Image (tube, rainbow, N blue to C red; front, side):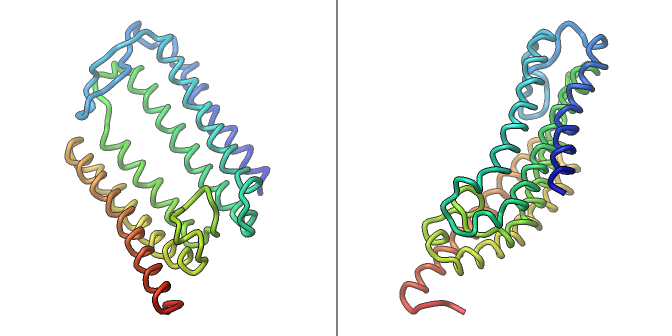
Length: 222
């Protein structure tokens, strides 16, 4: 299974490069390199600058995958090795997202690219959060992934309950964003996105801290 995921990762990382090779001759001399909040191009560059960007994103993908797939080796928590498969799958989801983003950039450039669909990107990020949320409840205590708060790291029960809650919230919030952002204008989609992100972070954090305070005063909370 691990070998299959590694081969899939390699293929997914290579896809944008293959796509760019086929699209290269059809690219205009000047391509959009930056977009405003509404998805309109506000800076242009030459094809070489685009090539640099396209090379950086796969490199980031490879680094993220390698880091998450091997981070358990340096994690001092005793359950770290149990996170190996979960973190590798999360890393694979991130690689897929970054490769899809790279392909969207190439597509935008090769089709005149005066407009960038911000809502589509935010929807994809929402889907990524839903995937991560699906793995959070089964993530064991560690120093590198999850809700790494002082009180979750010192209490396995706090970690378990906090991540059970966070997993449900991230999955539901991610699905909400993935669907809703597709139908909203860019500005409205960004407002919704960041509002939901704040909720997804604050609620588990407050829950975890309250659990810590109650546990400190009266012992384990049922």
